[in-house]
Structure formats: C-alpha cells, structure tokens
Length: 360
Image (cartoon, rainbow, N blue to C red; front, side, top):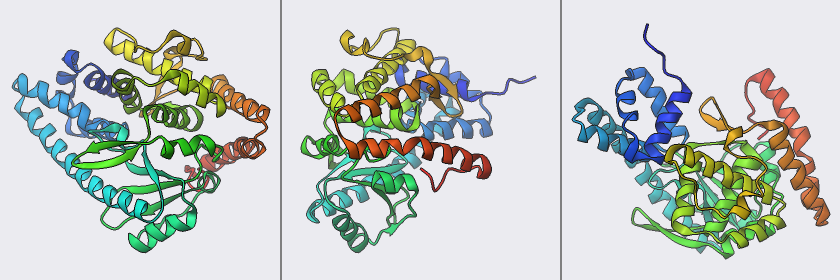
C-alpha cells in the first residue's frame, strides 16, 4: 500500500530546500515521487509559507543536476508563473509607494519584501500619516476599493484595499501597530529609521533590521502564534547578513513590553535552524537566555509550525499587559485588555460558522 504524504513531511522537505539546500538531496526524490495531486498540496504549502521561489529554485537546480527532466519541467513552469505574479505586484507596489510619499504619507513596506525573492500574499504598509491622507491617495489616485473591515482591523487601525490589476490586497497600518493597535511610539520607528531596498529594479522603503525583527515578533509571538518556514528563513538571513543591534532591540522591545517575546522568537528560529544545519545562529547568549522557551515547544499542525497557547502564548500576553500597565500607558493597556473577550468571541464564532472573518 502506497504511503500517503502529510503536512509534516511537506514542511520537512521545504525546510531542507530553503535552510540547507546543499544537503537537500533527500527532498528531490521525495518531491519527484509525489503524484500530481500531492504536488499541488506541496505547492500550496510552499505558497502559504511564502517560499515558492526559494524552495523550487533549489529543487530545480538539483533536478537539473541529476537529469530529472519531468521535475525540471514542473519547477520551470511554477517558477515562471510565480515570477510573473511577483513582477506585476512589484510594479504596482512601486507606484503605490511613490504615490503615498507624494501624497504626504511617509511609509515603510512591512514584511512583504522580507521574503525576497519570494513575495507575500498581501502587501503590508505602515504610514505615519492620518486616515484622511491615506484614503485620498488610495481611493482617489489608485481607484482602490476599501475592503470590509473586521473588529480587529478597526482596533488595529488598518485598512485593506483592492487595487485594479493587482491580485494581492494592500494592507495599510495607519499610525499604529500590534494586534490591538497598542504600539504608537514603537511604530513610528518603522518610518523614522527606515532604509532603502532594491528589488526587481525598484527601490522601496523598508524597516531597518531591528524593526524587521520587531515586526516578525509582533506577528508571530503576539498575534498568530505560529511560524511559517519563511519566518525562519527570513530571520536567519537577517541575523547572518545584516547583524542587528541587539542592545537597540532590547531597549525598544522593553519599551513595548515585548522583550520576552522577541528573545523567544530569536531562540525558536535559532533552534530550528540548528535542526537543519547542525549549528545555531550567532545570536548573543544574553539574548537567548531571556527566552521563555525554544524550539522544543514548536510542533507541526496544519500548514504551519505552532507554539502552545497555554501557557506560552498566554504568558507572553500577560507579561506585555503587566509591563504596559507599569509604564502608565493607559490607552495601550485598555486596548490590550480587549483581546481576551475578542479571542473568546472569535473562538465561539469560528466554532459555529467555521470562519473568524469579521473578528480578526
């Protein structure tokens, strides 16, 4: 009886191809043995983990070297289609960034460009401008349609726009970051400390390395509670190539009440990298010692790598609330206090309807 592949195996193959491509020989025959339907599932996971280009480039090179013509043809077709999608998205994103800047909306492109040469499924922007200026640019200039907002979107002060000709939604965070929009001072750093990144012939404003790690921490440790393969690969590359200032990271993360989560995020990434490369990332020990847990707590569930909600995720949340309260930031404390009832409501709503749309 033929073995039926599962998500754990797919994620393992993707991890090999993206974290240790030089020693990913076992992944090539594995993907080559998949049926057409199974390859569709594998490709779907690669897409949800934002590693289609990085994983299939590695697979394509190995298949070419070993003379597996059918696998070469398949990867060529997938890579061609994905690169075309990314090319279109970058062209429009460049226009949006220029239009926003001209319209008085200083911005930084969050997360989406961290995946280069891949690209996220939506395009995230943060701006220090107000809602009125953003609406003027997006709706009047780009003829964008404002998508329905959830309660979480309203709380976080963000809007999603559909732009004609662009498959991806453009998500604009206006003056706030965080699950409940609790971060304002920290958020401004994403513009005041931004740097410029060249991709596909365009130049985009992006967060500095320290803010890039902060954004990943907020999204993974304080919002979604799971990791994608791209999060591991992106952060590993940043640590190795951009040498973030860890003292600066600690200072700003402490102000936001998220240092334990940031240190834990880096330890989880480092542990996962060690699993596939044999060596950890060069993160200072004083940073790793501040982590509440590491890769030993991470498990595969569905298409992603998850962390336990109890006590790990809840512990990070309560720590953030306590530190925010001690700093006397009543507005942020109030916003954070809304999370438990919203989370409970979302859980009940999801159980009844099978969807959480309208909540988060």
